[in-house]
Image (tube, rainbow, N blue to C red; front, top):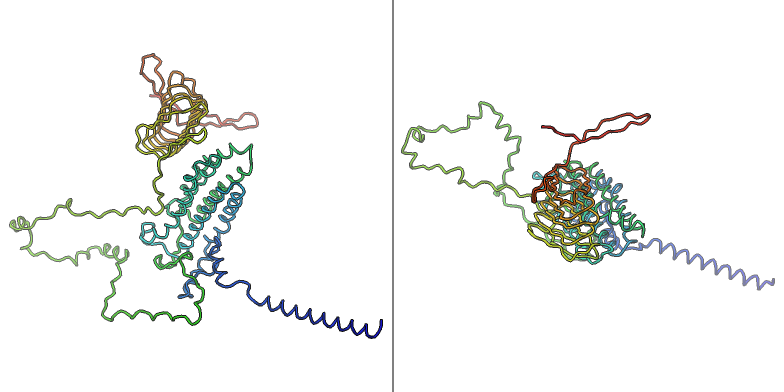
Length: 522
């Protein structure tokens, strides 16, 4: 290579080194520049579920010290840490599977997550505050619980507004019946059984989803099981950390002064050169008297326990003021009757989490009749039925329902003082979690299933003597059949047994339980 060629190559290498150095300087400068503005980061943190207790943006800028202590208290609370470890994984699993089932199911799942976010906020509030003196009756509680009430109502409205979605009705009903379990925060003293009741209501529809979809699409089965797992995780969490009700912080702040993350103002700095804040209000005048604090219960009990000295503070009555010594005083001073004195009005129970009354529904969707939320109706008629139709009766109270024609099956769930008049059933009559029901079958049904029911009367025809009746966890059940004498209109009442005696026996290498009905003679 010539000398000129070597010189050109050296010049080219130097230019490449200079360009590389310049690119490195640009890369270093870009890496030192923040890629996200503080305001954007704050808005992102505010919209991320279940990250509000980790000390993100959202605390009021006026009192950074108290807010920092509050955030530290929230982040260290065992109930909040357990929520992240126990409830959130089940919730995210349910939410992920919901997006794979149907858009309507995913929409409802988002509302479920919002409702659980409100539960998390209430738990965080209790972790930072001491329990009010009046408990859930405190006037400060309804505003704190109102966001949760509204979130639960939105979840239920998805089912009510999409009854035409027949393929997803059982899916939406499973969530609508189970999500009220999130209202455990207002239940005292045993929220665990309350969640169990809501879980049982959801299980009724969950079984239908499994039955309909187990041979079609197993993804739906996995989805419904994920929601039931979420309720199970919620119940386990409550039993471990809130067994007797919402756990408060005995050393925390007053509830009235607590400010939740969702209601806290933004902590972003104001633009430079803005108007300074107004000065604080003037102090109260020196002569203004502050109200004396109410006497504590300790002072009241100390006064009661004074013994004989308690009468020292009583004023001696002058003989001229005694009515038994001065009869003329009896006519001039009339003692007010105790019955006419105004009685204190008992405090009403807070309706903070009460869901508004549902509208009654009687509708045919495909081959399924739905009759629900009727109250005090003396005659509800379901006509135009066919042999392949199924009639589902939910949450009716003090009603009489007549089903005309031959149908496949009838189901009663969570009804009170409800009577049903039937003709003939192809499959069965199911009664679950009802109180004081009555069912009259003028024709024939092969099977009657009664579960978790207290108080029931079943009237069968002559054909009904061949009916099989299966009961579980039920009491006060009676069956009336035509009397053996053959007199028209005469019935014979047969009580179904409630007590069963179990004895243990050993047969070879196995131990078995022998059960027999207990009969009471006399």
